[in-house]
Image (cartoon, rainbow, N blue to C red; front, side, top):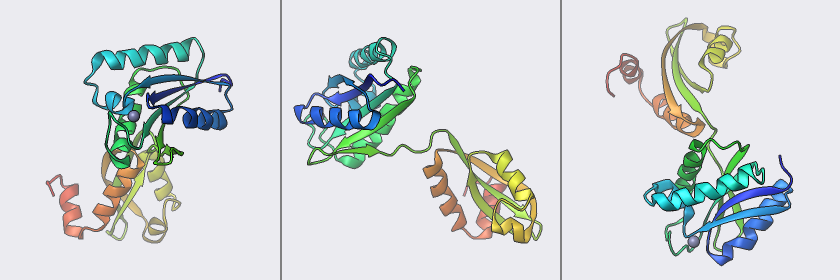
Length: 214
Ligand SMILES: [Zn+2]
């Protein structure tokens, strides 16, 4: 990672500048932060309504990435924002959405992160869900019982189940076949769906597998 520049898309709010610079210098060991400021940029990027504003941010990130060789971009939201007077949870969602939008620009950066400046303007990292598709799956054991699990690699996971390495369940009951899989957006979503399906009676699981709406 370039040791010189990191990019921040920050609110124009003066309270957020120094903490963000300090946090990013410390995290990346970089010398400078290219600070791109707007009023409530996480909201702007998430909503995409202000096209000229979004384009302006994009142009400046482009300079930072291509001219300064910045390899990380941080999107910042903060407490008590005039332009975006929502709480942490809503801004967290907006920031994650903003990260998705920035990814679409296809800039050669290694990392795009979300930050939150809390009421004391202490900077906290917003955890991004594991990138890419995750799957929830239901398999049938040799004893005709069902097992629900998650994975980001179906083939690899099924091979592990077949070899008795996937889970205690298949080690004990054996693997018969994969009955169902469903693609979800990230690990967290997959875990939620897994918990939901696991809570269902077998009949309802079979309905899902059969493609009936449940
Ligand atoms: Zn603000």
